[in-house]
Length: 456
Image (cartoon, rainbow, N blue to C red; front, side, top):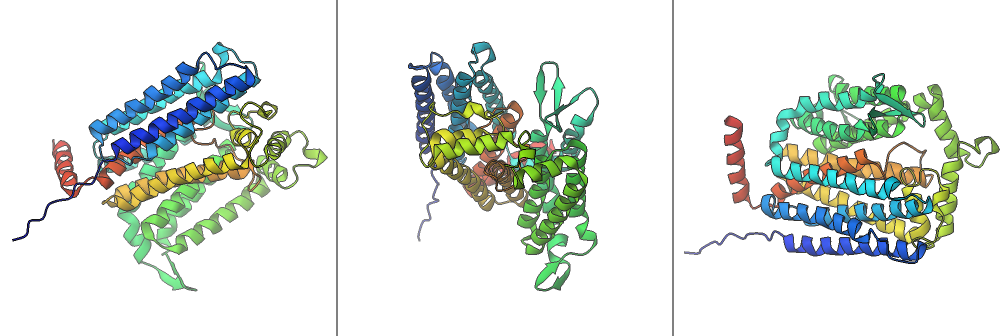
């Protein structure tokens, strides 16, 4: 009689630790190079920024060994190196603008990193099974749409550079749309996991496409109308595009029907033409995109033109950290941090960043493939697509592939709301990946424990 010995997959936590140490070393070396180049000495706060980032991510690593031993070993190191390189470039711009310790944006970004990492740890610790989040599907919808509409409240919302996407509470400002994208990804996953049969199996074939019934078009039409509403009321082209693109992507994953992609693209094209014909701020963005060097656009196109000149001066390998002039680009630490990276790290550096983002998205999609439940698949895919869409929209706008939008580069750009929300996304992906890579025996035990908690 043959005995079958169960194979226990390795947790890969030691691999993650090695990758984390390498990511921290890259960030600390880059931080020291900036100080040596600009000031001729290693920055005095080198130990604070490098050590602070190392302490934060090693705490997450320890929590994963305790609560999510089978989590993906690559997601956390990628987020760490992106966050670290963002701190380096923000510090480099601080030096260029002669900011002191009290006004240092890098110090503030490190504080926001600590808050974001704390939120990721909270997700890993308190969300013991991602399937429990399916109970909050419609609560997430209400919270998500509420956050999107929050900047419209008088006295609370702020109009900054033509877009009303910020809220101010005392000295602090926050962009609620960043948290809204997580809530809406949760809602889309919970809704589509129950409605995907009617959306994918029923309908008529036309020109080789399986078209849905008229009644089933309701959800995508509602998402389209809501995205246009965000564009009209808040003048926020980036959030509108991210919101609608996220829904179409999750809908395609849920149904595996190409017709939904085609319908979504047609609706997007129609909405873009409608917005361009009706709203002046969209017309300005498109005009800058098509005719940036016209004399009539000299004032409005100054920021993107300066960014393009900076990237052109960087060439293939860049001017070197601390040796460019990214401070000539307005808001280089937030909107145009990719242009600053392109100037000092060159085209090779930008490609390296895009590879890192591609790997992060790939690990998210791999998690979606590996997890055993439909809700987890759609949630992981939605979170991965949210990062991919955001990077595409930002980098596409900076490189003149598409018109500029108001989104920020995940983990790199200065801004607390973006950084916190993306660390929450990392926490959710780590939690879902733990379920995807965990042996079936452990998954069944964890499921029984969650069922007992829910029943109690």
